[in-house]
Length: 214
Image 1 (tube, rainbow, N blue to C red):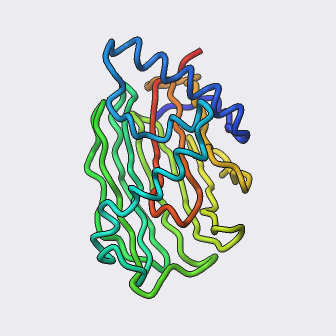
Image 2: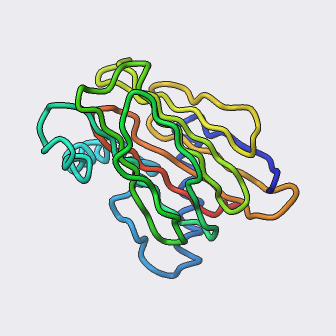
C-alpha cells in the first residue's frame, strides 16, 4: 500500500496540459509510436469535438454486439489501457441497474482490455451506474460512472477515490477528466489517469493510465 498527494484535474486545460506531458514521457520511454492511435488522448491536444464524433461512429464495437447495432437497449464499453509501468488489476466492481457482460483481465504495461455493461430495457437516469475498483501497483483507485440525462446528449457523471482518501466528484460538462498521484510513502510509482468522453450517446468511455511526468 502506498500513500501520496493527489491533484484532481478538474479543467479541460489542466487535464490536457498534463496529459501531453505524460504522453511525451511515455513516447520517450518507449521510443516507438504510441500503441493506441485512436485513444482519447487526442482530445488533450485540442481535438475533443472531432474525437467525440469518431468515437460515436466507431462506438458500436463490442457493445454493439449486445444490441445488434440497433436502438433497443443500452450498452457501454469502458476501454482501459495501461501505458504506465505498473500492473493494473480490477479487484472489484459494483453495477446498479445494468448487467455486466465482460470484466477486465489483469492489464500489464502496454496492453488494454474492455469492461462491458448493458441493459436490454435501457439505462435509467440517476440509477444506472458502474463502480470499478483497481489496484495500480499498490495504490487503490475507485471510479464510478453514473448515467444521467442532463445535457443534450446525456452525460456520465464521474466520481473517483484514490488512496482511500475523500471521494471526488468531477465537474459536469467537461470532456476530459483525470488525476495525478505522487507517492509520499510506501511502494509504488507516481502515475496519472484520464477518462473521456462523457456523452452517453457514444457508447464508449476510455480510461488510460500513465507514469506521471514532472
